[in-house]
Image 1: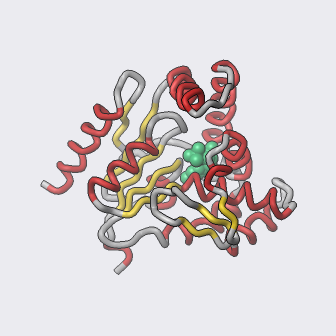
Image 2: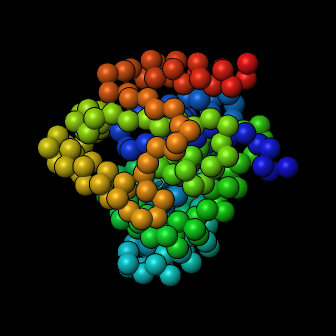
Length: 224
Ligand code: DC
């Protein structure tokens, strides 16, 4: 039965390391992985490809329900939308910003709900996003909420982009992060917030290994 498949949710703003931790946990447990932000990013890209306005909620929701999106592996090395490879586009700052704008629309969020639930397959699912523990999988076995200061998140993103050869100022990134946080947290539909029963981890002064070890300790408690 679908409801018996366990889910662990990892929510929080971007740049907290939640994507890295969620993927690592999925590999460690050999569970499935859902990066829900990618779905919003794919809709944003698809809308641009089809000339759908960001404000056209009806058309966006129809597109979200019908789009043919294929993840070649659960870890997103390849993502095709209607047969076109879009993995590189999905990861751009622009796609993230557009995703955040369209994600404020409740009908679009409802249209993506079933797709997210479909990822709940045995033996279990690690779900990464903003509203995984609050809205999409409120019955998750264990919920994490990762935070870090906006300055630290901007510095992390800056390092990643510089390593990729993308030149962007730290100030611009910090500003983008603050705008996105505000929009994601203040929207009426499924805003970014910590579930009452989520475990809070502030990753500001922590390495990925340290965060992972805290997460694993909590997950271990679940099974004991
Ligand atoms: O995690 P991300 O950067 O890929 O997410 C991009 C945007 O998508 C994010 O700013 C808000 C939206 N999003 C959302 O509203 N709900 C989710 N569960 C995941 C992402």
